[in-house]
Image 1 (cartoon, rainbow, N blue to C red):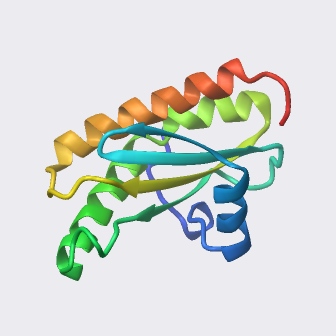
Image 2 (image 1 turned 120 degrees about the vertical axis):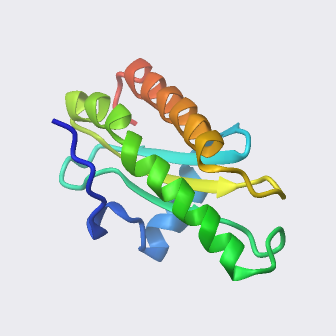
Length: 132
């Protein structure tokens, strides 16, 4: 059964964890999303993520919030793609979704790109058998 909730403990809020994610993590781009990830051997925490929509590209907060909500919803609906490979290997992951495009995109386009990025991450997790 899929768990479609998105509780607080799945959001990456710790400044030290975010700094560690960007210093030690790996990244790839599925335009318009840049995904930065860091796989951890800790089983106690669920996958954690955060979303960044730069103020440089969207001056109005309304547009930034619009995109953040669409990205969060796409992740919430499809996070199960990551859950299975992570639970099999008893690992967790920290994620950052950075929005790169200067234009507003609709939900279906963002959802399609989110699915692509999560499937790519799942393949990476399955191919990386050794603990990092």
